[in-house]
Length: 108
Image (cartoon, rainbow, N blue to C red; front, side, top):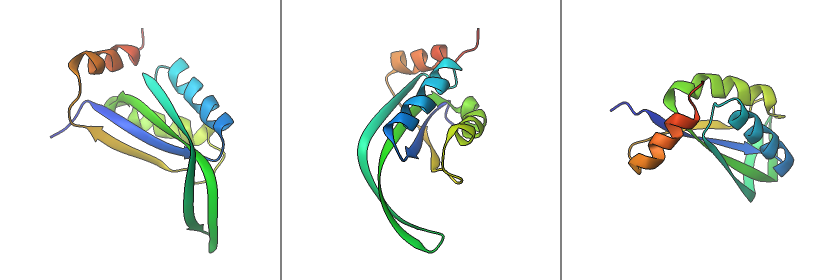
């Protein structure tokens, strides 16, 4: 089943980067809402190096039609060379909320 709405998860090394990315996505109407969760710890291996870092996670609510443009825009704004950007389809939600998401991401 194809869905009309999606959540995009983005990890960012610091809160200031998360704020900057979120503000741009809202201003450009690529997202209806960006929620930032601070103080997440990520543990991973990158380029052969074991890494632990404190990160902020951006939870982006948007319409599926904006995903490709969101990926491009986030990659332009993100400080990592290969940022974590993951899309999760929204299968169901409060109809009034989803209507708001759609209206908030519509270019006038």
